[in-house]
Image 1: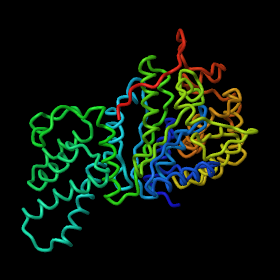
Image 2: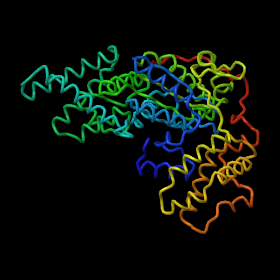
Image 3: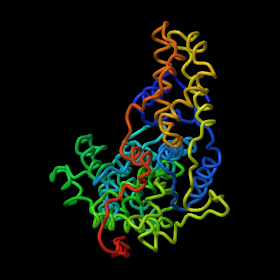
Image 4: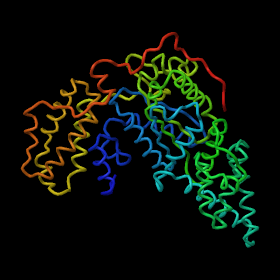
Length: 444
């Protein structure tokens, strides 16, 4: 695989601040072959017209976000559209399906359009509709042709969704087409924003399509089914939705947490009714096994239960268990990053000073600085390693080996990492009384 200079710069800029790059990860991935193969199997499954849910399970530092980003890269290589949503405190409640829908559509991307791709996808689909009609209608006037397109949009949406597309959904898409044909691009963009779940669309624009209010929770998943159908009709294989850091649910207030877990159960129960859609959630063992989390909701826990036998776990069960990093994987990743970095201001110095011996000592030093918690090392190690390569490149007199004269000092730890090092594994607040969840009323 050959990366562009832009992609290489992106990788190192993200690593410098301790973040997971959004592209180019496959250039330095190490030891995730089995997990990638399982993600590929899931993509093939939904590509055939199925719908499914998969969970990435791992402790802090196991690379859940890294693996989820790799899944996005793999999906786009295979012709899928993708959406990568990060759960933030009190920002995304899974029982509010309009919230879920809005986040998913906002982060919708393709290989051609990394983010906010709904408009591009819709244009591609309508272009396909027009091309098919040109072949069947032959020479007709513009008004007749546009009328045929509007009828075909309604017919196709009904077919794509098994006649479950909401009337407002169809009407808005038809009106977007009409407005674009009339050159009213601002109004068309406003309706597209409404279709994306925005609550900031002028009443005068909504009136053009005969709609009122906002897109509600009870119809949001029907809209999502329509979006997935359009994605496929536009020429893509399907849609991968990643929901990263689902364990954030555990920090919600008790009532919101209960409702969000029930919303997650409903997504799992209904997944089969969304052809060509794969949901991928990431979460910590605490999220799955705590009574505050999935284990407190028996219908969900029983469905996605994680099992090990003799220390072995099948990758094909609902939860895909990610193994923590070890020192050998860190070394191999460092070798790949060094090869990517060479070729800047002083490539000869990077090759000369960033030796295999140096990498080995850095791995051991950072691991020791984190008190042997190797699973927490990758983010810190990568950041330290890139910083040292930068110094070698910029300062010819800098000797990286002298860095080992003092023990490695961790720059910063987030709250979760501090908890792990302090051996306080739980991130939960104590609640009084029985916290077992019970299913709530279905909303879709």
